[in-house]
Length: 524
Image (cartoon, rainbow, N blue to C red; front, side):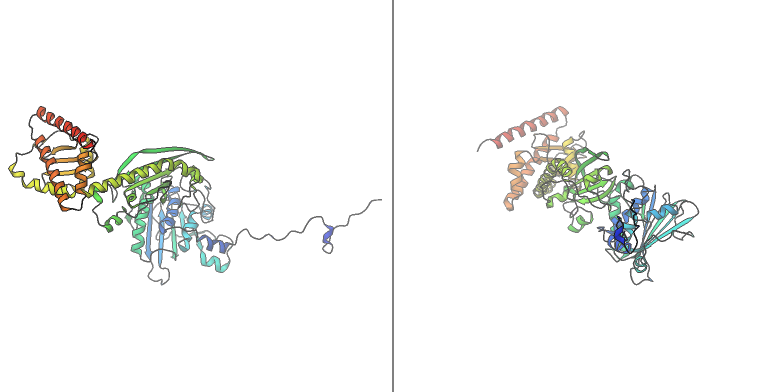
């Protein structure tokens, strides 16, 4: 006898083997998500604006214009910031994706600056309560908008519609492009337009220095933004004159996305030229109180601070050198890159790899800076000797006008002391590390005698240096007399008119220096 199976009913739910489905909650609450994402934590307004400029560059823009202005009619949050470009522009569907969190058409593309599709809404709303985006690829202009207050008050759960609009008056005269307007800016560090301008100029010039060198036109309120090199190697920068220290270090690192390249280089700042600047001028030029390490991803600065230096702690002497670390986007995980692209959090394996080389270099640079400051400290008796020798110049035979090529060692020392040269004095005494074993090197340049004391020779190390750094006036006077004795020897050497005689005197100086070093180094 067959048994019948009763169908489940509402009155008998247990007759069913399947459990009733409960309504599924939304994955996120849109209004709360927008309010929370405003707190992503962009360190500066420049870093938030950089997200918009990244999008412009990703769209192939060759010219980007940033405007900062205040609407005097508004008493609350009157400042507006706009970013306009001549990039490829967007159709309506693409613009909708650009305004959607994570809605990029290039999600996880590591070929250039973008990756997550969070930059436009995230960066814009981190500083403003409303963002409007206008984009065009032909004669049609599309506009999209995100308004924090509207979303919260009206409970928006979807993106507002993308509308076709008339060309706005602020649209650049390019066939394609995009304008992003940040309205009701309520999270700016500064309230004055001029102050915001000043900081944006400095920060954007540094962040996009590689793109600006390559020809990108970036204007802030119609004024070109110039590249700013924190290593101070760029002759066109506002502070230039540093020298590269050592060779560029290159690392190749494997990742799940492929092999990536890391490049590291160091520079030394010209201490001899800049040590006498005022404290305010040093701060203005970015010499003191500036991060030592700049980190670039795909040619764009993404962070700066004190990285990969192992156990070495930062000291005041570390103001006088710089380090730059460049890496490919395929290494994002190793560097700990977040969607805000404004900081690194390196994995331990990467830190160990780089700090093994970078920490010893940083310590060596710190020691070099210390020694150079010590040399500067002992320069007062040299200046005194120059002035006293100049007073006797009229009663001495004239020096030759020309003397052939300058020795490389001396040329290097002069370059480091460029701004301390006394132009109206017939003598110049400087101190530097020479590669030779001589106590000093001398050269006549346009009738002017230039002498470099070798800081590694015992004459300087054990005699002149300790006296010159002493606080006692008698010791300072003795150091001046030693400097005068060196000047006299150098001048007598260069008075020789025949090359053979001058060569013989050069050889005598070398032999004298070696014997003097032997005497100084002999046991007491």
